[in-house]
Length: 238
Image: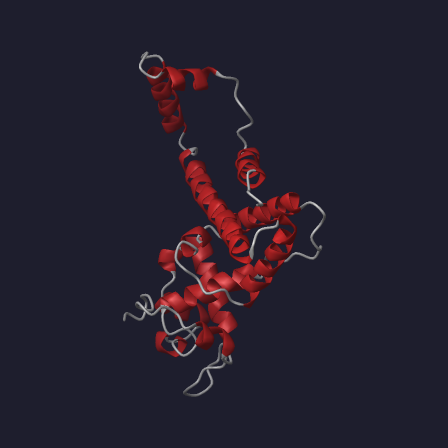
């Protein structure tokens, strides 16, 4: 197993990660805490992406040698688990669920979108299985309380929340890519000309009709809200 790689086929042990004390198990007490390591890793990921998060880079951020980090996070996969749960602490909800579970679920999705836009590395980090830590579990608990009136069974509630999170992560990934592409006016103009030519070739009548229809609001917020409404309003509660 590489020190900067994953945890192997067995993955991260949730009991060791979340139920044991946060102090290192061996050696003399270091001059930094697990919290400082996580904050340094999140700062790197926010600024430079997940690729920048290596044990060596994180160690340099806290002014330590890379080997001294391993009693807190033995590999990068464990560090990612800690990072995801750390930033999940930002997803605080103080109001109890209302009488409108669909509206509450949409509020959850908007919170998740804003959260992932603050931390653009999160969608990629969430694409592999994660073991929910205390902050993640607190947010999940709120989501499950929102879903209580739906009539869904326990497994379906978990599936609904997973589906919602996957939707938000996928949308944010697309949104970030679109924002990067829009920074090139020449490319945007070329794409518009290309679609106009395709619509006019007579071979794509359905596309031509769609492109000639009145436009909708194309702000990122409006687009996200439309997609979200279709997802949640069609949620089966049987």
